[in-house]
Image (tube, one colour):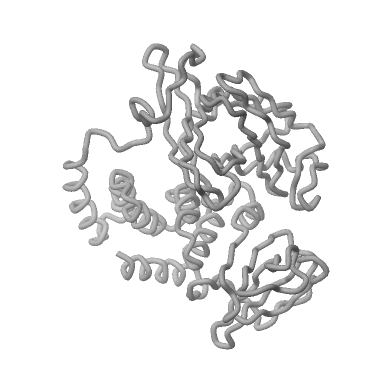
Length: 381
C-alpha cells in the first residue's frame, strides 16, 4: 500500500504542475534562498537536537518554512522567534522534528476555493501529514475545479485507515466519473467483497458508549435536531491531530431521537489538550453567540475552550469551566474582545475578524488525564 500510495501522490502532484517534493518539502517552486519578508502569519516549529539561542524557550525555532533543501542539507525558514526574525537557514542534521502550522496555512486559503483545498491536500501528503490531508480531500473531492483523481487519493487514505465502506464509495464515485478506469473498477470489486463480510455497521453512530464511561443519566429531552442549525449532528467532526488522541462517537437517545457527540479521552497524551473540530465554511457576521450544552460525568470540573478559525486567524476563548453533570446553554460571545490569536501573540485581547469567512469550529478540552465529554445542541444564534 505504501509504495502504491506514494505513486498516487506523485501522479497527482505532476497533474497539477507542482514539483514532486520529497517528504518534508512543500511542493512549491521555492527559491534557493527566501526573499526578505514581513513577519510570517504561519508559525511552523523546528525542534532541534540541543538548544537554539534566541528560541522562545531556548529549545525551538518558530517561523514559516519556505524550503527543505535536500541537496545542501538545510532548511530555509522565515523566523519569528524571540529576537531572531527574518530569513535564515538551519542544518537538517540538527532537526529532530518539524511541526507544520497546518491550521495557519489552511486559514490562508480563499473561502470556498476547493481546488485550493485539493492542492493543499497534495502538499500535506508531500510532507507526510496524511490525517490532515484526509480532512481536506474529504471536503474537496467531487467539487467543481477538483480533478477526479482526488477520489483516488481519498480512497487510498480511507482504506489505509480501515474505513472500507468510505473507501468503496470513493472508488465508486471515481468510477462514475471515469467509467474506463481499470484501477477503480478493480478496487470496487475488491472492496465490495470485503464490505459484504463486515459487521452490519462500522459507522460513527453506536448504540452506547464504552462501558467504562457512563452515559448521561439525565440527558436533555430535545427532539432530533436540524443539521442546518445544530452542528453536533453534522458529518465532518474530527479529532485534531495537533492535540491528544481520543475516540469520537455520535450517540442517539432512542426515546427522543436526539443525538449528541461523545469525546472519550484515554489520558496520558503528550499534549496539554484534546481538540475536536468541524470544518465549517460559514458566515457568522450576523450571529451574536455560539451556544452549546455539555455533560461532564466526573466530579472534577473541566477547562474547555472554543476556537473559531476564520480566514484571518485562530481565535480561542478563555477557559469555560464545565462542572459535573449537564451544563446547559453555555455561551460564547462572538463579539467579545478577549479571544487569543496569533496576531496578539496568544494574549486574550482580540476580537474575531472575518466572521463572514469561518473555516472551522473547535472544542478544546485542556487536560491530559482521562475524561469524557458529551456535546449537544451546538449552534450559532
